Structure formats: C-alpha cells, structure tokens
Image (tube, rainbow, N blue to C red; front, side, top):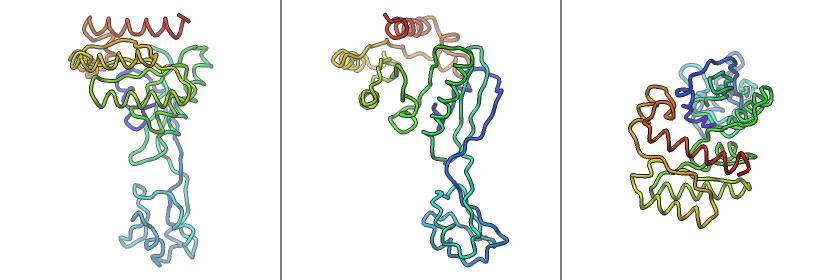
Length: 258
C-alpha cells in the first residue's frame, strides 16, 4: 500500500495478470474548437495551470481539478474529465497473489489508491481461500497509512533506534490506538544505537506493547535487495534467524492465539 513510492514489486518476482487504471478526481481540458481565447480561465486559475503558447491549454501537472475555469468559461469550452491518477495490478508470485499499485507523478488520492489495493487484495484472498493478508504499509501517519491499517487485526511498526524513529513510533502507535488496532514493534538496525533500542523496549513495556524483536544492521540486506532477493533468502545467517524468530513470535502471539 505504499503507492507513493512503490517498490515491493522490485523485490518480489511476479507475473502481472491484470492491470487497471485508477481514476480519482478530475482535470480540466480545453476544447480548442469552442475556445475563443478570451483568457478568462487563465486570469482565474490561481495554480497557473492554464497556458497560452498560441493555443490555450491546461497543464495537467499543475491543474488541481477545482473546476473554476469550467464554471466561468462563457463558451463552455473547458470540460472536467475524470483523471487517471495511477495504476493498480494483480500479479502472481511464488508467495501467492500479489496486489500492488503505483500513483502517478504529482497525483493526489494516495489514500484512495491504498484502499483500492486493500479491497482487491481481500477479493483475491477470498477467491483463493487465503486466511492471511500481509499489507506493506507506507511510512508516516498520513492518509495512505490510515487507509492501510483501517480494520486490520495487527499493525507491525518497524522503527529505528533514533530520536526521529522513536517520535514516529509514538505517532503511529497513537493512530493505531485511535482505531483500536493492536500493534507490535520491531527495531531495525538495533545495534547502531543500543541505548535508543533500550528506550524503545522500555516504551513498549510501559505501554503494554508486544516487542517482536530486533534486526541487526547488515550490508547483506542491501545486497539482497539489490539482487531482488528477500533478505530471509539472501541475507546472512544472523539476519535470517532474527527475522524468522520475529515472525514465529508474531504468529504465536497474534495469529495462533498464543
């Protein structure tokens, strides 16, 4: 669901079986036949989206879809067309169905696209009788994050042992708490600052949050990603064991009723 900077498809080998256009919002388009070049639309547009290089036209990257130009045009030469804001895909991978998406450049509505990915993932899970859907959520606490975690059984928060990492951890915990969602915490690169890692573990203890485990800093993770191999398959033994133990703990505590 990280549709703004989609990259999971680079790591998971897959075969795309369905590609669909994601439409959201509207963009203005000028009908050159009806346009009399009066310039009223250009004067009214506060975003500078109306250009005149001999012919009046709309720059789609600057158009915010407010529709003012369409409303004030005396000859109804400006129309508001549904906007193709991105693409979403259904693919097959060795791990099962893989639903992913990519938001277009300078496009809004990432939360809606994340919700669409969730919707299609659930449909694929139901169709294939799969009981577990794993969502790769975006960072932060914005609209795509809220769209990603709404209604989930568990949010796994991955943070790093830094001041900003702890701050963001608290923010994401607050958002999840607002929606009544259980959380657990993983610290990535825990050994670059063990003091901060200790602060995170203490924070989890004080707030009744399950601490799922730590992952060491390792160049093998970057090497695996660059080769397009998940770290649990291509990383060093220590990192693979850490990740596998984290997954076992999460399954025991949340998925198997332990």
